[in-house]
Each structure stands twice: as structure tokens, then as C-alpha cells.
Image (cartoon, rainbow, N blue to C red; front, side, top):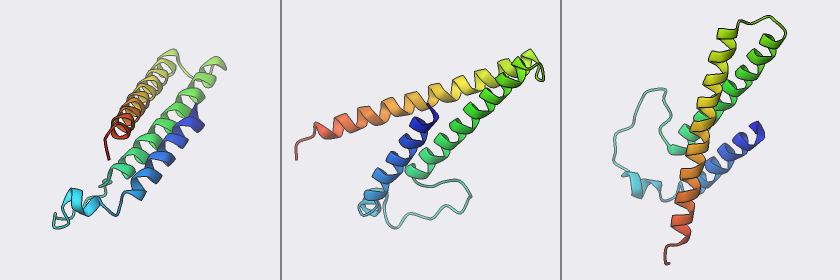
Length: 110
């Protein structure tokens, strides 16, 4: 499942990168720049969310394995597994929205 999340982030970043030529017209070229460390475009945000989800899934798996080996408490295992589940549900919801948007764009008349 993790390679699929990485692939989703890569595909979305590549697709949004190809639209960079029309981005100034959409976002307004004269808009003030944001100077914070947060990502400013959709591709960066999607890549960050995907990376965070992969990290939480890996942490959940590692904690579950530690719990089976007796090195982690039941509460720690439950918390990390629930965090991983929430991250996975978020990624699935984003994927569904991206697919829905793609289908909507593909139905548009040119």
C-alpha cells in the first residue's frame, strides 16, 4: 500500500508541475508571496500529506510489531494504529477527490 501512496504523490506532483505555465494566470501573478516555511502550492501540500501518511503507516507497523514482541504497551499500539488508520482514510479521501476532479475535467468540452 505504501508504494501506491508514494505513486499518488508523484503523479499528482508531476501533473501539477505540468500546469505551472498557467498557474500565474489562475493564482494572480501580483499576489504577495508567503514567507513561511509551509508549502505554497497544491503539489507541495499533497507531497507533504503523502509523506506524512507514509511515515505514520510505517510507525504504526513498527509499533504493532513491537507490541507483538512485548516491547510496546497495548495503549501505544492502539494509538499508533489509529493514527495510521486516520492517515490512510485521509489519503483515500484525497485520492477519491483527485479522481473525481480528473473525471470532471475529462468530461469538459474543449
